[in-house]
Image (tube, rainbow, N blue to C red):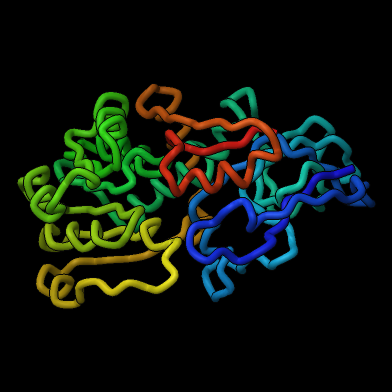
Length: 331
């Protein structure tokens, strides 16, 4: 039999285990041109929360009663497709199933000899490329600029900060605990850090940590921290809207400051993106990240949870900040 995880309900607020359903189905068999995949590693990411809503977005919402899906590393255990051999490992957007068939579309082979397989879901996968391409394509980060990063201890934010240091910038991170503050400075080399949970006035805290102002703000959280960052942006500053985790579980959309005059007054560029906007640049981005990884210029952390049955709880734990770096489930 084959275990599958379905979306049972659309969550109101923060997701809970009751929003997921485990079911069993017959183990599939590959037909002509297909491969049979066995799930090995599953990526859980905050953006999946948006797909649990029934609303138009950059990617189709999940359907109630249908399998969830995310980035997965899988092993080819049977092949009727000339492009794949038994024993190959592939990376792609796949369903939360222990076994599934595919015609190979959208799958990329990954090499376990070059890097650990899990790395292709993190630093060498969409996580690393989100950090790299956001900075390259929107941030256009230059030497000696000040880079501010929210969600700085997370999988994307920690890579953003390290790239900023490679490029010769002052890097300031925002995170939610003293343990995370210590980590981003000691392990990832950030120049300064702000604990937003113990800071009464984020606008003043950012000004103190960024005495020359903020040239580039890489935003992973949105909300009041974005408001405070905007108040500290320099002329021609760039704001990269990557995520808004502070808002993902809100039932009503909160109101914030009107930003128009701030953007106009300082000629600020503020642009949202998803990494798939730059899919044609994935190859060069992964090559550069691989070089930095090989040269020990960047490092990464993973929180690894074991067991297919643990996938929903690992996803929920993201919203309580229980992950150190990339959250991955080993099946």
